[in-house]
Length: 107
Image 1 (cartoon, rainbow, N blue to C red):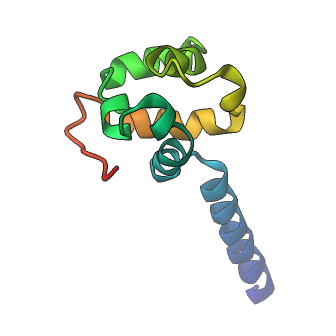
Image 2 (image 1 turned 45 degrees about the vertical axis):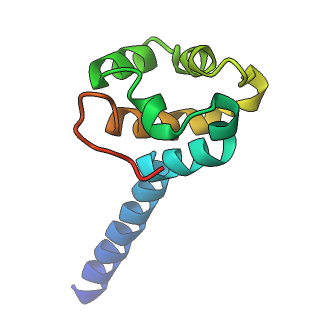
């Protein structure tokens, strides 16, 4: 009985850690924006995220046009500068700090 409980707890811990690392993160998106796009865009992440409301960001992401919108907002950013693995993080950052969210990032 105790072995089964230990195995179940270990499995729960592993699943908890795996899902945490696999999910996107607004903080990581903010760091990516500052490091990779702030100078190319000419403004900070707060101004970038405030370009749209949460609903608008969600629609853009659901339509698969987030990368295109990033390039449209920041014309100095080229398509090859944006890795696909960054999109979800930057989207989460943009959604979290959209113009109707009431949140203000520290960048």
